[in-house]
Image (cartoon, helix red, strand yellow):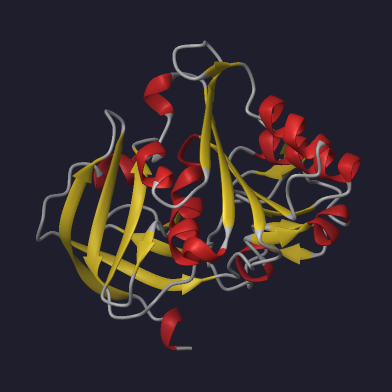
Length: 263
């Protein structure tokens, strides 16, 4: 496959989104779909998966926290520097219905903001953004341009409603406000949203995060239940998630050993 071959691209623009997040644009001649990811390589560093936060067929962008060796190095790059990219890879979000809820934890808002912009005015979207504190909220203003409403929550009450993002979501799920819920963020959040959607019988899709080494479904590092998340996902629907025994319970370390989620 053409997209499985790593190619070199220049950084064409860098945006400082928050104190902790930068968006990196690359001149990239292929169109990614919302929910897909790329494998990013910086010379001397480990190749890592990154969700696509913008793509129009001419440029592609990723939005990144500096949370590991590769992304810390990414944050030091300048316009004109080179990186290796494979992709776009994986299965994207799929549209189900018109009245939609987008639920994001932290930087999980990046692929959902991209999806909202692609859907445009034909969909009625309510976005729910949750984070530990105000500084970790991302793309509120961007989502306001594409969504009917944007509800923010913070654990410490520094911005928006104090508490968990699932609390305002559940109030609207009780009223049968949505056809489908889309969630991207920490797996604990995704499992909580899944449980709510099961309770109120609402369709949902979640973008799962696992350790991706090859991105091709060959190495097995990202296996969850019967699915290889890099190729069968990263987006799985409610029916698929029911069959993932590990969901919200276990993950795997870089050696492939199973460990309790969050440990």
